[in-house]
Each structure stands twice: as C-alpha cells, then as structure tokens.
Image (tube, rainbow, N blue to C red; front, side, top):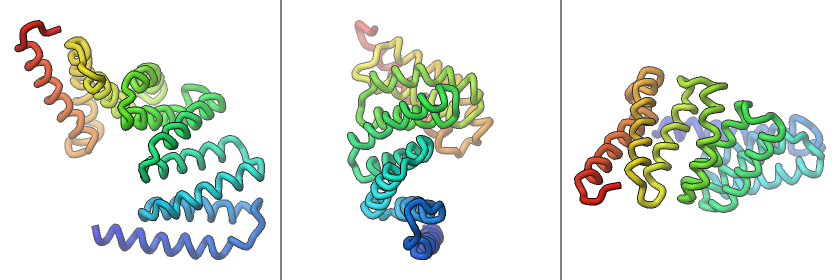
Length: 228
C-alpha cells in the first residue's frame, strides 16, 4: 500500500509539472487541454476528489466554449460522473451517466464498446441507488448485445451477467422464479469466469459468493410454507 501511495504521489507531481508547463497556452492548444485532462485524472486517482471535481468541471466548461467534439465531451462527462459518485453526489452521477450513455448510443450505436461501457456504468449507478427495476430493464437489453459483440469470455460481459443476477435477488422480495433465474445465470457464468480470469479474481469471488448465497435463499424459501 505504501508503494502504491508513493507511486501515486510521484505521478501526481509529474502531472502538476505538466500542467504548469502548458497552463499559459491558449485554451484551444491541444497540449494544454491534455495537461488539464491529466491533472483532473491524477487528482481523482490520488484521492483529491474535490480538487478533481473543480478541474473536471472547468475542463467541461472549456470544451463547451471551444465547441469540442461530441466524443471529447462524453469522455470528460464520464470522468466527471465518476467523481460525482466518489464524493457521494449520486443523483448528479446518475444523471451524467444517463446522458453519457445516451450520447454514445446516438454517436456510435448500441454495439460499440464505448456504448456498452457507458450502459454498464449507468446500470451500476442505478444499482447503487437501488433502482433495480430500471437497472434490470437496461441490463436485460445490454447483455445480449455484449455477448454478441464482445463474446461470453469478455470480462465486462461476465460482470454484466453477474450484476443482472444480483439485481434479480435485490429487487424487493424476489420470487422463487427470480432466484432460480439468478442461480442459472451464475452457474453459467462461474466456470467461464474462473477459466478466463482465475479463481482469485474479484469477479470470480463475487460470482461464487452470490451463487452460494442465492442457493441458500432458495433452500430457505422452499422450506417455508407457501413458497412462490
């Protein structure tokens, strides 16, 4: 942990030096824009969240003034949404992630990797806010696209399916049908995730933990009178 902190501090120092080198250039200068972006990212990674937010909001405002491309705007909005989420401004994060997903969908279509990433980020924030119905609706639509375009072995595809199973279990009082669908999903994901990612990978650990817990939920429900 100490080594990681030292690395982040050194990286932050380099980004600050980079920014100081180019801050005097015009806003349209590409090196200045890159330095500002890197500064915001570095502050975020170093845990200076409020400072990161200020830099990212200024960067977005600058891009809007300069008439930047939609792609560049979406990238900055995505970073800003992550910072909002990190500092606990969940509603702002949700709104931005929805806008980013819609933006990529219009720009690239549903099968582009950036669109799929944006959709999944939006789903995760919906889950954080326990808006499980909305999360399930979007991820049901997104998973077939991810499986078709990225493949079943891709880490994000596996994580999407894990998250769908979690949403089935967390939405109020799930039915036995929902719980069984969650188990079937996790049973299908688990061996692939273990083979592709390795048994110690966090996604694999979560899949296997969710699977065990969901099986226990089914067993308890089936042992109760009037299970449905």
